[in-house]
Figure (spheres, rainbow, N blue to C red):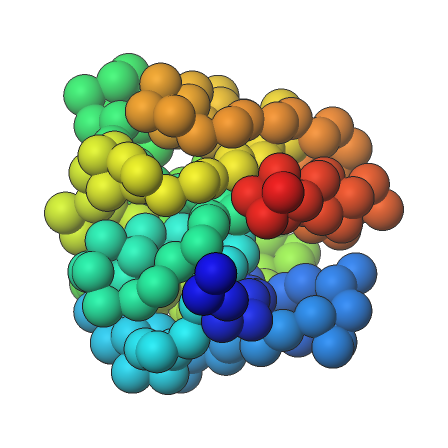
Length: 226
């Protein structure tokens, strides 16, 4: 019997923390912790993944926005993908037309329009409550100005051509935090196409920060390898 190549775990960050910092409870020896350039486009990120891991058998772990690059790279046919672990995946393209998704897209689009005319404060006034659940606080504006600039320039998670059928045939585990209707809707849509969906309460958008996350992933891998 021909032996499969060793599994290489690749950890892909979202729009916030990068590299190792995005997966604080993962063992540093578990795999590769990707750190994309802050100004890289989604297509740049997809190309980086393909160029870096062609020829390897990979398990792609991706958080939030990172799921867009992960799914597009997996669907390219140029990677040997053993499975996907998608944590709160921001795959908005697969759920367009749904009320909760369109509301989010509309608010972000309007907010970024304000940033585009150099009204970063107005951008943050709309974006902060949407993403972090807290209203704009004028007393914190000086401290949060740089954060607002980064978010205003970040990639948006829609318009990249992601389709739910792209995961067909790829074992996929989706982990959400049970706190946000948008992510739960995306997860249910993926589950309808064969993904496993598990809710881990207690860390909102970052279930990978929970102690129980590692055992969930290990069990998923165990079922894949038998």
